[in-house]
Image 1 (cartoon, rainbow, N blue to C red):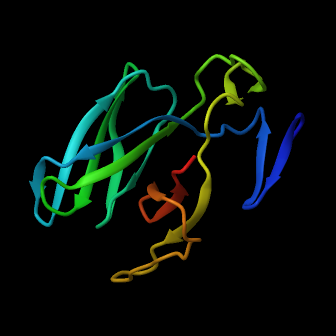
Image 2 (image 1 turned 90 degrees about the vertical axis):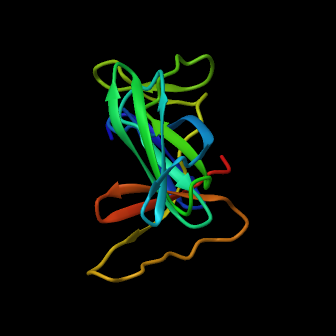
Length: 166
């Protein structure tokens, strides 16, 4: 880290410098599934004004997964698959690169002049992860109670967990 700072918090440290982009909350909402897919149901919708590579975090009583199926011209096509019938309600959050001009406070840019942190935005708070080991396993992670959590797919074999009361 050539220039920047580290903020120490309850869950570790958050590094803020020109070499690491912190993911900020772009938008959030609730989607209701509309299409049947075997034991699951799905919903597809678009979000405009997206910069960077968005991540979709989801929370639903029976479980769900969300991803960006297409990103073109700042319009992201979001696909959510939920365990449950048509009409299943899924809360979702889209996190992406910081993109708003700094109205106040601290803003950090990389060597190319691209904003990597803006104190005026709300950021993902990572709470833990669970990996899938082998086949037929049912992995889990224990998290503190009293918070709302959402999950996102980090790789095809792992999902991260964030809490959404940000």
